[in-house]
Structure formats: C-alpha cells, structure tokens
Image: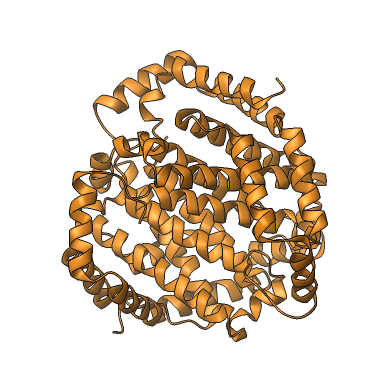
Length: 122
Length: 122
Length: 122
Length: 122
C-alpha cells in the first residue's frame, strides 16, 4: 500500500463489503471526518506546544495520535472518492492560490511581527 | 504533482519560505485542520442527503467544496509531516484493525437493521 | 441549578478543586469544545434527517446525545468564563447583526428557492 | 435578554420568521454548530497559550472571538430547543457524573504529574 489511489480502492471495498455505501453521502462522511478530527484534538488539547511537538515519543499517546490520523485519512479519502475529487490536485491548486495571496515577502514580514508583538488570527 | 510525498515537500517549502514553521506545532496544525473541516461542514450543512450527493455538479458549491477539501488535505499532510507519520500506512493499519472489529457478516446484518428500523450512532 | 451564571460557578469550582485551571487556556478549552462537538456529530452522522429528528426517543441514542450536549455546554461556559464573555449577550448581539444581514423578506424568498430548486451553502 | 430560555425563544422566532425551520434538523444544526466552533478555532490557532489568554484585550481579535462565541451559543441553543433538551440540566448532570469519575484527590495528583512530567490526552 503506497498511494492514495490504492487506499481509496481499499476503503471503497471495505464499505461495499459491509453494505455501508448507503450511509456514505458526502454530508454523512463530512460529519464522520469532523468526528475523527475531534478525537485527534482531544488527544492534543491539554498539551503544551512543547509537549505536542514531542507527542510521538510518548509511548501511550503516540500510537493514539497515529491511529486518529489514520481515521481522519480514511474518511477524507472516502469523501473525496464519493465526490470524485482528486485530493492531491485540489491541495496543489489551493496552495498555488494561497501563494498568490500570501507572497513570501509579505508573509515573512507579518510572521516576524506576530512572533514578536501580538496575536493574530490569520 | 501526484503523490502525498510530493505534496508534503511542497507544503513544507511553502511554510519554510514564509517563516511559518514557528507556528506549526502539532497542536496548532490540528486546530487549523479542524477549522478547515468546519468550513467544509458549512458548505454541506443545509443540504439534503440527495443535494449533498450532487454537490459537485453545482457550479457555485462544487468549486467551494473542492477548495475546502484541498485546504483539509494541506493541513493534514503538514501535520503528518511535522509528526513524522505516514498517513497511508496509518490509514491502512487502522482499516485492518477495523476489519477485525467489524467483520463483513456482522456489519451487513447490522447495516440492514439500521437502514430499516432505527437510528444508530455506531 | 437554573442559570448560566450558576453553571459557570459550578464548572469553575470543579476545575479549581482539581487543579485543572493550569490547563484551561482559551486555546485548550476551544480544542476541548471542538472535541465534544465532534462526539456529538459522531452520534448523528449516520442518521437520516428523519432519524435525527426522532433521536431523543431512541432509548440508546437519546441519553448519549443529551450527555454530549451537556459536555459541549460545560466547555462553552468554561471558555466564556475564562475569556470574560457573556454568552447570552454575545449571542443576542450576533442575532441582531444577522437580522440586519438576512432580512425576513429576503430570507423567506431564498429559503423557498433552496427548498425547491438547488443546494446552497449559506 | 438574560436567560437561555429567552434566547431560545428569540432564536426560534428568528428561524420561523425566515422559514428556516425546514433546515433545522438536529443533524444540520449539529453541523452548523461544528462549523461555528471551527471558526472559533481559526481565531485562536496560531496564538501561543499566553496570547490566547490575552485575546480579549486585542482590539481586532477580541470582538471576533466574542462574535464566534455568540454564533456557537445560538446554534447550541437552537439545537437543544429542537431536541427538547435542557442544556443547564444536561451539563449539571454530566458534571456530577464527571465528579464521580474524577475525584478531587485523584485529579489533583494526576494534574500535578501532567504539569511536571509528561503529556496526557485525558
């Protein structure tokens, strides 16, 4: 198993074998994706930034974070399959778009200010 | 651009070029991932199941859903990069684990009951 | 127990008694809130709209949905306490603002079209 | 406006006036709630814990965080109304339940260890 395409096939077969395709509307899958992301947040919520950076070295939390990332990936890949969206292409297009909106120069200048002075939501 | 590995490199360079690595703790990236999933939910929230199944044919909503999926993928790939997790492997492992917990026979029987009789959260 | 103010006091004492105030930054509490909302979504994700409307009559799911709403309320009230925000006033202000943006006439006309014709994300 | 009951009435009238009741299934409202929580996370995601603790003093971010809390409250209150759940009672019951599971003594001891030694997801 090495690519999104292969994983997509595997997840599709998993759902079909269990008669779960009837539940896999985009709406339901988006909710399931959000539910799994919620479980990921729950693993990280009380950690300091430093603890979160070292979480994979924690023998109890590391495997749990990895498993949640697995769940998130499964539902994301399944949702994209049902919608007919190429995730890598959608991400690449979005990144190009963001590159135009946040130029390197403006972003570096802003990041320096955020790091030094004050909070920012952007 | 065709693989998660290539996208990972692209996103990493994007962050480094803008001095954004300082903000990319696992905790912060998990929040950003959840924020993007929230935007995806917002696009689908008022749709019927049938409307959600046809959303990519909607000339206004289709591109928006695709863009949100791109954003979700970007943050998921970035988070996995920072944590050193192979998303495809984590998903495959989780799927094998789920396959043991939800056997085909038990799942089909349960799905038939859910579809016919009553709601279920599982 | 009947008001948000009383619940706020109760949750504050609960955290203080357990030395949990050190973990209750707005950032951490917002993550915890999102985690609980994720659990709520998980209870509803595979239901049809009709099944979701009847969920409180389900003897298994009803209590679980109620418990998740309790958790969401606890973290929302705690977050507002830490930030010094009056939730009822913030909601009322936002509703007045929304009332100006979505007038009754425009909203009814748009709702009629959405119900009849096509999906909408707004 | 001072109580959840009054806010509930206001939000109910707001929806009825606009013919939005047709969209307000528990499922859809839970998605809308999650979407608003996602917007709240987005305001806090890049802040340090210290910056998040001071966010209400930021003249740009403070009003945005307050507005997002207002939106979250609106959808939570609306969802509880549609489900017939008393949020304050559900939260109080849940808190009593948590009080039995996390006794003051055990929680203080665990919190001391978490603060000093290592991360924990609980």
